[in-house]
Image (cartoon, rainbow, N blue to C red; front, top):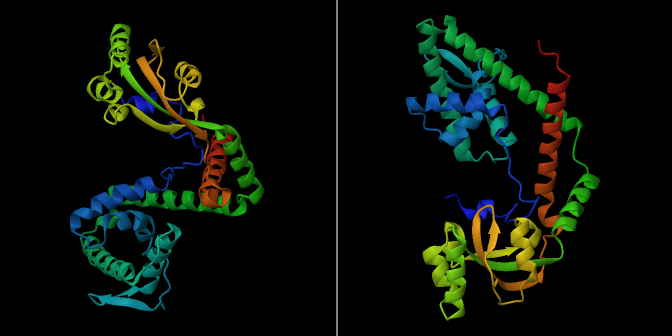
Length: 304
């Protein structure tokens, strides 16, 4: 059975401010290439390599002859611009370029040059697979630049951040409830549990043994603090009617089964201050704007 904690509530941590960052479209090809390249034993960590592949693929193109060299490999100069291109990719991902990382990048560039020279000797640049992957890499980088250009020209404003935060406060202010529950499949089982608890059995012990919600069941039925509106309606209606320390006299039916609910405590909602979550709010709004931009382009495109 799926975890009830994920299903019972609309959002058990009812917070539009708990943001997650979706993988950018441009990362797909890069990740696949990184996985392929990892078989060669690169010393660079895989997570760093994955973020650098797109730039590295084109790192051999259109570099000035007079560039300062990082190394000479088999008599061929390796321009410093290749290292700089990869460093920029790291910085754009929000990670600092430490001396250790810079050393890894330099070693990566040299290793790539060795492999590229061997591939060129074998005439692989003319293969259909190489041309297809280069075309995909060009598309990936161009799309990334499109999104970066849009975000640069359409920044999130302080007013937008404040408005989003105000919506969050309005939706989550008021009281929070600390509840516990026991979930079973049959009404008869729930009634028997209520009877046992009234006779002296411990709610927590029964929850650990019989609850079909493994998440809360392992904790004696504890659902922690939540805004009551975050639960499914049947659960919410029963919960808010309870007095502190009391449980439901009758089982509560929901789409997940039958619940025995206990109200453990009530408090005023403790919400983060705007300053504490401003970066996350800005990031989420930026993602929303970019998603809308992508949707609009797709909607306006004439596809036959």
